[in-house]
Each structure stands twice: as structure tokens, then as C-alpha cells.
Image (cartoon, rainbow, N blue to C red; front, side):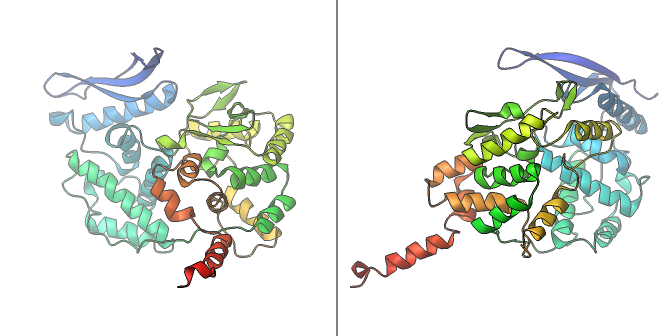
Length: 383
């Protein structure tokens, strides 16, 4: 049997709001002559170039096993991440999940080489990947093995491999990092030593609790009348510049948070000088990121060397017990916990569950302990 011919087609579909959305689909005939289709992405979120690349991969996959052309089971490890995203993973997977999957398969490729077939990855190869990560942090090792275990597990369920080679590979113990809380003096010092861009970023994080990815994808159109709106967006163009598809971490991540005057003023200073639809990413960087994506290279952060620059700001501010950028969000949560009801704070922070807010942010402040001491010292508590 010859290699099945695969076609790329564009099909419309009515959305709930009545608008028409177009999707890229692959169409081919299986071993029984029946027509098969596979939806691979929305046209406004996936370029034709990317869709064509998946078409070529699909043709290779189907041609590898003509007796079962509807079940590709001869895939190179180098093609597995793209196929997993298109066919095996969840269609609504968060961008952070996709990043973890691409990173994990990248480690596997470095350890085993790009020509390794997916079905040829055995338990000893999984152990070799584990050994390749020996110089990485325990958190990286654990995340990589957990991610690969899940991906190969789906491939096993689909009949593409005989067994999951990562099933019994040992994991590092979970790394539990305490939430760091910055004092008012520390955050003020960081803002003072920062340039206008970073002063606005730090101020926004510590006064609204927005996550790093939410801040990086924030546009000027998301800010109005003392509010900042966190909402998903489709890929497109604005003022001849690229807009990248993005969605919040969870459904409740779509939200609006009040913007204090000092943060709003810092943003206005930036907006007056901006040449970009994004608040913190200039036009040159947007074009650079777009070029890398078109070349098949992934850029993790819209701001280059984000974490390194944040650590440098902490050091310049005289903070040597360095925290991560997410600790600014933790600081916001702990400062607001004594001030507003927990269910309201959970909504403003975009937590999927109120238990998350209670676990990590309730009563972190020293002032909370002071209130407890005062309450314990009251005579009414003593019989």
C-alpha cells in the first residue's frame, strides 16, 4: 500500500457568540479506505506554515505503517512533542503545560539523539535521560520525568508503544519552597533602583498580584479606568506588530483587578513612550520573538533574561536573600489577606480554588501574629 495522501483543509465552525471560527484540519484515508480527519488548530492561532509542518509529519507517520495507516506508531522522538500537542494532549492545555512538554522532550533529545524512534525508547533509555539530568535541580528532574511519564503514558494508551519506559523511573522528592514575603522597605528599594520599565513591572506585581505570564502578555487595551483586565487573546496583528495567542492559567484566571493610583501613574509614563501594543514588550522584541517562532524556535519569555534581570535588581536594592518574581504575588496576597474577605481575595488572585488562597496567603504577615498575641493577652481569655 502506498503512503496515504494527506490534505490540509480549512473548515468553518460557528462559535457560541455567533461568529465564524476557522480551523485547520488534516484529511486522509485509513487502511480500510475510510476518510479520516483530524483538527490540529485554529487558523487565527496557528500559521499555515505551522499547519503544513504538521501535515508533513502526519504523512511520514502514516507512511511508516501502511497496514494501520490510521494509527501512527513509528515516530521519531524529535517529532513526538509536535504530534503529542496535535493529537494526544488536551486541546485546552495551558501554555505553561506545553512549555513543560517541549522542555522535557528537549532533554530527552539531548540524552538520546534526534534519530531515536519513539517505540525504541526502553527503560534503560529513560534511565539515561534521568542520568543526563543529574546536574539539574531536583525540581527540574522531577518535573521532567513526571512530564515524560505522562506523555509516554498517552502514547502507550494510543497503542504507539508497548510499555511506558518512565513508569518505574525514580523521582526526586517534591521540592516545597516557602513563599517569601518582601517587606514594604524591600519592595520600595527595588522600585527605587529600577528603570521605568522594571519599576512599573514590580509595582504592578506587588499591588495587583498578577502572575509573571499575565504581566508579560498585558496590553494597553487591558488597562482602563483604574482596572487591569486579565483575559485570553487570539493571535493576530495590531499596528503591523504581532499579537501572540495566550490564555490564563485557569478559567478563573480571567479576571479584573483594581489598579492603585501609583501603579497607574507608572504605567502612564511607559505608555507615553511605548511603540508597542504590549505594556512591557517593545516593537523590536515582538518582531524578534515572531521570527524565532517562525523558525521553529521557542522563546520562553517575551522579555529577554527576565529572571536574571530581576535578581540583579534585588542585589542592587541590597536584598541578598533573593526571592523569585512569583514572590511578589505572594507578597500581595499576604498583604491583602487581613484586609479583605478570603473569597474576594481568591477571586482577585485568579485562584481556581479558595483553598489555595487559604493555604498560601492567609496570615503570612507578622501583623497577624501581633494581633493573635494581643488577643491572647486580653483578660477575658483568662478564666
